[in-house]
Length: 372
Ligand SMILES: *[C@@H]1O[C@H](CO)[C@@H](O)[C@H](O)[C@H]1NC(C)=O
Ligand SMILES: *[C@@H]1O[C@H](CO)[C@@H](O)[C@H](O)[C@H]1NC(C)=O
Ligand SMILES: *[C@@H]1O[C@H](CO)[C@@H](O)[C@H](O)[C@H]1NC(C)=O
Ligand SMILES: *[C@@H]1O[C@H](CO)[C@@H](O)[C@H](O)[C@H]1NC(C)=O
Ligand SMILES: *[C@@H]1O[C@H](CO)[C@@H](O)[C@H](O)[C@H]1NC(C)=O
Ligand SMILES: *[C@@H]1O[C@H](CO)[C@@H](O)[C@H](O)[C@H]1NC(C)=O
Image 1 (cartoon, rainbow, N blue to C red):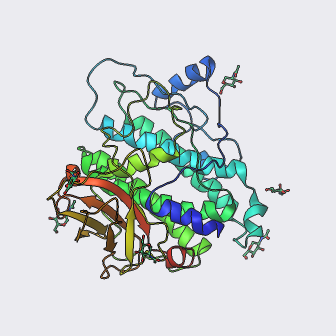
Image 2: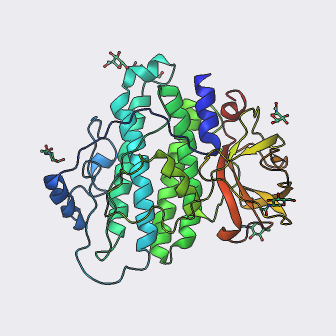
């Protein structure tokens, strides 16, 4: 039951709970001064050269995850071409790094063995944590010297035991893969696009590991993972993992630009999120509800693989009566389906989306069926 509620919570929109919320590191003047050294890309271990980003097996946060302050620009001038995209990615990466770092600090090798996981699970989590630390450093170095490199906010995640953590791993990794398909479209330099593709490939290896070793399932995700062009909308849902008011004051808005759309979820009594399931839509944040104009036809737009499918929805009696829709039955049960509500068929621009996105995990189907 415990897993059930966690999976349900994170399937469509991350819900904050009070798990593991202790700050990783306090900030002070000397830590701020040390973080400024990160402005030099040659400072500290180099990703692709140092073993720290691969095989470090300590509990303490590895470099540069131990230096959580923002890094100030060292030159005046306009931002370089892709600085904003890399800043968004760095802020997202701090959340993902913390997700793994907190697991490394909260669990030990026997915790995973006790719940029937392979005896190297804790080590793999440490290795993924190390890869994510390498991403922090790579993204810092991609931001030019005229732009700030954002620091870490404090984070909280809705896991409280090894299994609920591992379920979130699967959702977070595949969500990273999906938002990178959008971010790569915002980047203008082909070198940025190549670097983002290389990062997405690493997240895909993490996902594949969890499918094979943790869930003992077929690792293949269909002929294409899901393309979602509006990356900032997925990034925005990760604000649920940030402790409100905890971000460094110098950080830019996250994500930038931010639409702050109502979050989208499945109704509480949903029993299946497999293709073909008829579900009720829910907008779980009471302070951020959608508005539906009279006389406008709205659609649930579902993204899967490289395609999307729009289903007209009846919003006329909402909120008195819930909005119901069927997840397109033609989708295979691989990877994820990304659900949105839009005022235009096919959601051709980000402005046409009025709620969401919600991430529906289809693989392993055991997570979406058995645990719901
Ligand atoms: C300040 O931060 C540094 C680096 O994180 C740490 O080593 C030091 O103990 C901290 N000092 C205080 C007074 O908290
Ligand atoms: C692992 O952590 C558990 C608590 O979660 C503790 O009871 C156990 O002693 C720890 N095992 C080792 C080998 O440190
Ligand atoms: C870990 O598991 C593997 C595969 O099940 C086994 O061969 C190995 O002996 C185990 N190692 C330890 C230290 O228990
Ligand atoms: C969930 O509740 C709605 C009414 O709010 C109902 O129409 C729907 O059939 C219920 N679904 C399930 C699977 O029980
Ligand atoms: C839509 O029309 C109904 C009456 O038919 C009215 O109560 C409601 O406020 C209108 N909603 C909006 C968003 O204009
Ligand atoms: C959704 O699919 C339609 C039809 O193929 C396409 O025109 C539209 O651009 C797609 N929407 C997005 C956001 O990619």
